[in-house]
Image (cartoon, rainbow, N blue to C red; front, side):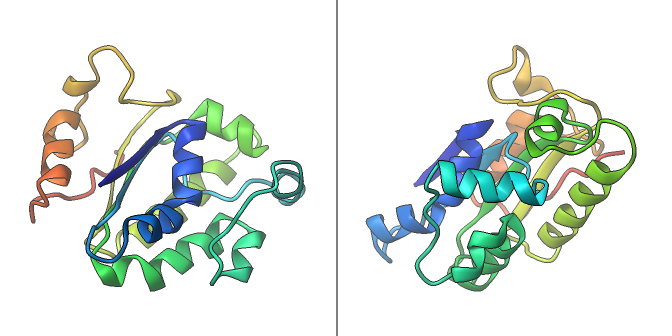
Length: 177
């Protein structure tokens, strides 16, 4: 099963990944595809507000997940990755929509440094890969001509997604320039 989301739907899919896996049971693997839902913590007050206003539900075994995206990713590292579940992230180095949504300043390097920290966590796990392009665009899959988007390595998004879907050992992160 592929649990996919675009933009805010990517954030929702990421929050409910473990819940969907539980619903399908241990014999069915659920993989995550997040397009534009950068795994980056927002400013603290914003996260606290979202948690309260949206009545966000977190995995039962992760009380620290209430603190942000970082603890949620750490939880998935401990629980989902050892089972072989895959996580794919599509994003841009200067995503203006995500930057604004998270409350991060448009100037300076805070967004860039947080994105690079997050991508470094992906780099530790062969089942967690990303396709990140330079620029301020937001999502990829619903863009006209998305299939032909090329990463730094020259691989197209459509080829990268085929490798992901087929479980190829050649599926690798496309680093931004």
